[in-house]
Image (cartoon, rainbow, N blue to C red):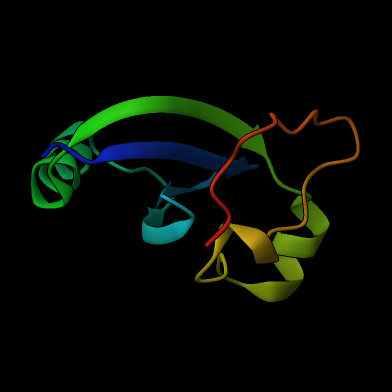
Amino acid sequence: MTKNLQLVQITADDWEGIYFNGLLKTEGHRVPFRDLMEIIVEEGGRIEYWATIEADADWLNDLGNLPDTLREVKFAENEIIPAGLVWA
């Protein structure tokens, strides 16, 4: 049985992170396409949803790194968060 995956890219200034089903898989100044594809293959399944969402840059600068779960991310004020996200 194929599992459904939700991929969310969180960005803030020059930093980004990739969450699969609400869990942080990788982060850095740039996530290379090859790394993203390796994660997708590792996770298996089918991507049913993807989004890019802006985090609060000041919050992330103070924190230093993205948290382990999407639930802990502080989003930018102007972001509209899509319904139905998996938060982990």
